[in-house]
Length: 58
Image (cartoon, rainbow, N blue to C red; front, side):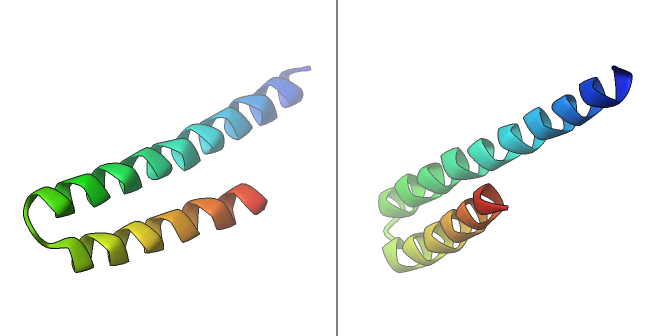
């Protein structure tokens, strides 16, 4: 039973990290638009979203 609980906690931790990356990606996009570095912000946004979606598929 303890093994299942440990695995469940690890899965929950990974899901938390994935959703945090998605949230941070949107905040990077917004802050880039505010400081007039839109191209850099969009590039970083796309990289972060690709990483979080890839992690979500695994």
